[in-house]
Length: 453
Image (cartoon, rainbow, N blue to C red; front, top):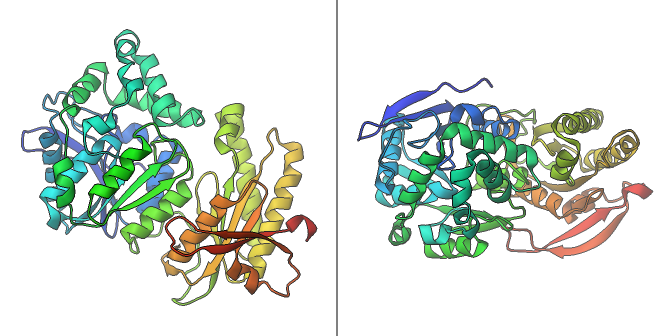
């Protein structure tokens, strides 16, 4: 899709807030990564744009720049919590549709919590991504120690924050892009003004007043916040779910985005909306499908070692090989996540044959590529919910989580896939029982011995 159309809404104190609203279906407001947000610059990032596009295919997605940042009024002097809540109130009123779902990212989490507690009738779901309830829980000694760097070299400060605290050292491309976004979004004075106000943010008393379903998401290796803060936050909100994912980036579009997207979509119940960037078949309700997920091992290390241009060349070769295999074995591409694919098959046998072909062809391709390209493959079967060009449900989430359990070069399958392929000549080795994240009962997993097939 093209660049979204930017609109403006005035907050109660006259500050103009820039936003865009695109897509159809349930309204989901993806709140800004305060204090650094820029609606135009972020759209230039390939993975960030792909993240939004994946959500746009399922809902009416809304993004806005917080006051003092990006395309919103930079001159806004009032950075108090109440002012940010008022901005969100003005936006929701302008959107003019029923309850909205909120995705509160990092420093926007207290604003989302305060809004949900004050307006329970306006919030259907709340997702808190790497969030916290007060400034104390958000305190990062490393960030506080960068005060002198802020004053001496703003450019160096943004690069350091983006690499060390936001994107992660193993995602250099995204770190560089986010550092550039930080510099475009605001200056050192605007950043200092925000954090001076943030020191007073505290919505601890509001947590027990949040009545909508809440999902607290955290990456185990993230520096912001400490994982213990996420556990504390989830425990304080009645009925909140906590899901901890692998990785270190605070940015949702960096790392294992497939599992994060599947978890978020399932929690929000996003079943409506225009077709997204996928070509999955619209299977009738109750149709058995075999779901295949792939994920490139050491994707960020590859990009860091080879650089953006050469790394992208390898990714294009990976995409070509994957799409050729899907066509050959009758698979439907549901979506591409940049570092992996989700696909659907009407036959477990064809899905396994496709997985084997992928591993063999990528192994052969390694001889002519400057990087050992290896993928993790996970397969599960079930009766997913199919709408437009996408698939949803527990069987899809389980397939993504099985892929996350695989090693590079491995094809890992659920017991139901193994049983569906019985008598077809495939050989499996038992991996044992595993409790997949978000599931109560353990599942038996098996490694497909594809090198012997």
